[in-house]
Length: 267
Image 1 (cartoon, helix red, strand yellow):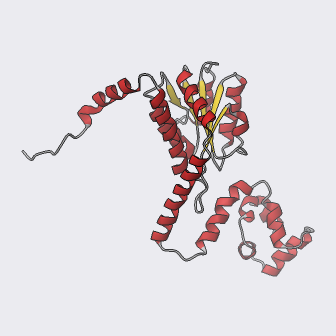
Image 2 (image 1 turned 180 degrees about the vertical axis):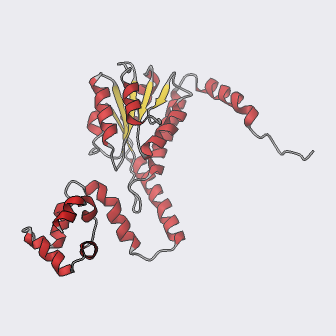
Image 3 (image 1 turned 60 degrees about the vertical axis):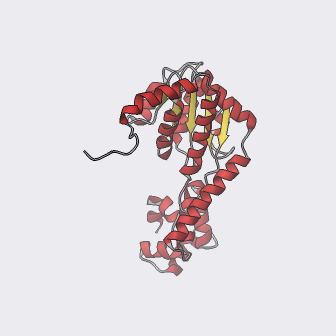
């Protein structure tokens, strides 16, 4: 049993006593005796001790385990999920800092170049942020490319103090994002963080923080809430940019040949 725990500590931290006993092919009583042999009161305390340090990663698993035990139709889950996103959006709106919003928009417009850091699901969001800002900035690059973190590190090696790094990190926070932000800070580059709360490991490294509430019951994070903040930032930049109307007109003109105009008639 000890060998199994040492080989799979994270997996065991998610197991009930029944699951642990079955996996080790022992009785539930033996699983409890194993915990007591370690000087603990029982399996519950053993599991709690094992989970230390894994708390943030285990939260979505525990929420999913709890929710799966409740009776619900597919429509109920749809409705609950949409309600969660509405609630996150409202909490985000109510907690906006006017000062941080102004600083974020001005930092984007003042930057010579904007580099966006985000991996995992945040990599997809980084691409959407690049799309939203590209009309109003001289150069915007998402570093969540096929080259992964090594490509991002390579690109960041050429940043300067007049550039801006926008970092996106939400639970579960990826160490690569934090490492690259530290590297950018060591070069004196301003960092704008889009994250979930002041206790995020990204927050103390950032010069400007935009917080999006993102908690979900059945998932580790709400990408919808983060996307709302990204679109809000893009909209605010467009509003303040002196050439946004011209840029929008040029974009419309360039994509016009690929758009459908009115109803097509049969030949």
